[in-house]
Image 1 (tube, helix red, strand yellow):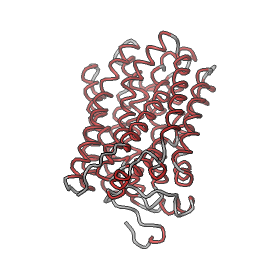
Image 2: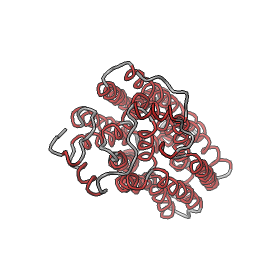
Image 3: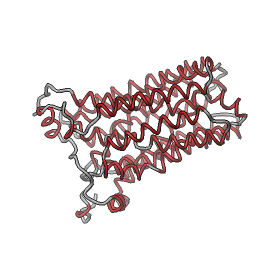
Image 4: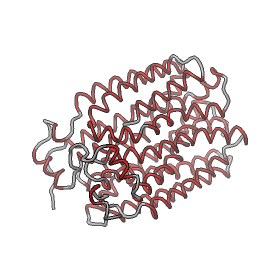
Amino acid sequence: MMHEPPGRRRWAIAALLGGGVVVSYFDRIILAAAAPAIQRDFRIDDFAMGFLLGAFGWTYGALQVPVGVLLDRIGVRRVMIGSILLWAAASFLASEAIGFATMFAARMMLGVAEAPTFPANAKAIGYWFPRTERSLATALFDGAAKFSNVIAIPAIAFLALEVGWRKAFVATAILSLCYLLLFARIYRDPGLDPRLGPSERAYIAEGGGAAEGLARSRGLALLGYLLLRRKMWGLALGFGCYNYAFSFFITWLPTYLAREMKMDPLSSAGFAIIPWMFATLADLLVGGWLIDHLVRRGRDETIVRKSIIVLGMVTALFVIGAAFTDDARWALLWITVSLSGLAAAAPASWSLPSLIAPVGGAGTIGGMMNFVGSLAGAVAPALTGLIVAQSRSFSGAFLLAGAVLAVGLVSFTLVMGPIAPIPEREQRRHRN
């Protein structure tokens, strides 16, 4: 049994990746937090606002497979430096938007810029962590997505009221540039990191750290091979259903509280952070620490990870309760329980690409998984806007989110199968 080495470099890298997710989600969340002011200034209805909220997801989703292949071909560091620079440019462009069309273009540009973020993080965590620590490491960057709502929603709501939403976009652009300098200075793959000691390097390798290197198959050949694997599709569809619900919450929750629960912008922002606080804790403690703790104690890895995913998705079905109440306290209870379930399942889901990928294929699998997830995430705000515009109520949107999550349960459990590496391409006769 391996003993914990003195080195902690891998956790510094995990913290760096988590900080990047916080910064990227400031860029994503700002539109939802400032939605009432932007709707008023641009004079657009709920249906149009739904499309605007979903604009990010169309380019983000469309590029997931290409950026996954790109990550496997040229590596994490080079891709992410270009990506972060483009984040900042997109936010500067949004600050100068003069109407629906220019804001839509800016949000699509942000989708292009942030497309590599999660596949790159999943690939980097695979390199930097042994299997017994991978869930907690993944939870650090995935939990950062939830925690960003805790600080970003009230901060942006305050900025939008005090200095205007345009200056809030400028602030997120400057924050992105600061993170770019930090990432470029610190991040290297383990084999190129001069601050990674030999004992920690051996600890990672002996614990099942993903093999470094570029994909052995050419990008399109590997992609075509993976598209024929049922395991890949089970993961992608399950994650897509998860991301539909997550996107619904992240884009429409402030507006739901402000409008249906009759709250002013600052009050709705304050209430909105409650479910995100619990989601962050569930992400770190259940989706991260608990999984690694059970795996280290010798529990079957497939059973542990899939059990957390299933329990999390089942808990997320409590979103249906919000469809049947007009009491803000009950609504927040159901939303908090649902988001906490989603959050607990997320790190287990994001740890899967590096666990099931053939050598050099984690970026491609992460990209395919996030491609389906992002398309679902783009559909969610637009479809919600349509439902609200027609029914003048969020009840139908909550019910639909519950139905989508039920489909996700089936995909993760029955379609994906056991958590085991997909064979190398030349071994295609051995089907999973």
